[in-house]
Length: 318
Image: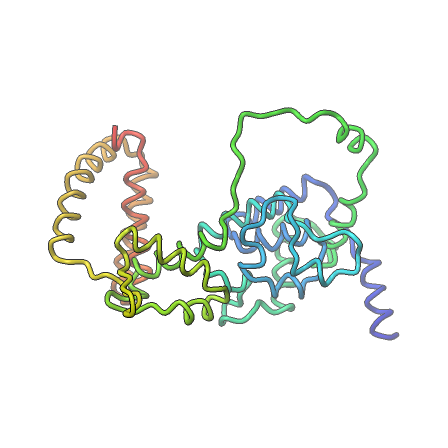
């Protein structure tokens, strides 16, 4: 049997996910891992091959709204219609950005052992583990995901009829996808706040653009916004440097935080539930562990989450 005929035989044997209930069950099982959820949604809503999905970068989806073309994928398909951003993919991508704060040139699905793309064998094992978690037997990894995409394209007649009916209008706001400019701004802001870019360090737009895999235009816009917020100083013929926090400014910030945060913490403590207390204790343990390991980025991230967990109480600032 040739490799081509074996591949066709495998495709015939692959079964789609049986029902929308099973799809929801898988999504619920993998939802805590936003990377897995994004891969699942992309596979079901685009129908492209696993190899193409694993090569995607943040910039390939950044700035796209639902229904807009994912050009990097459309150019590699033989089918007539373009590959577009689906609603589930759009939602999970927003969560991915908020949770991971990736740079625009980062791979969406990186290997846990390095900075390269997740390998196809590892990704296939991952997909099979989703089916196992959902209790689905006889599935064939990415082939089953593609079969599911194909079956979803075949609309039942009643769905076609309902699609012709006028759609109801809901009192909700539209969801805006972050633009490349916004992603660049957030990445530079985060790098400065976490001291990955240190006070006094000079920023060169050309080097930043090359490293982030983008043009200099969003870099210049981000620099302008950060200068307005006093993160940076831009001087003609001298370039752009990261501002240092003076002792005077540090004391002023500390005094303001003490005035606001101490009363908020008292009120939050009174209203706290046992779950709140357990969460705060866990975060404190994580912070101590990060300090012991000299992991500054992790310590800063956990410290921020620790404080915001306290502030989230509805009575904290009332």
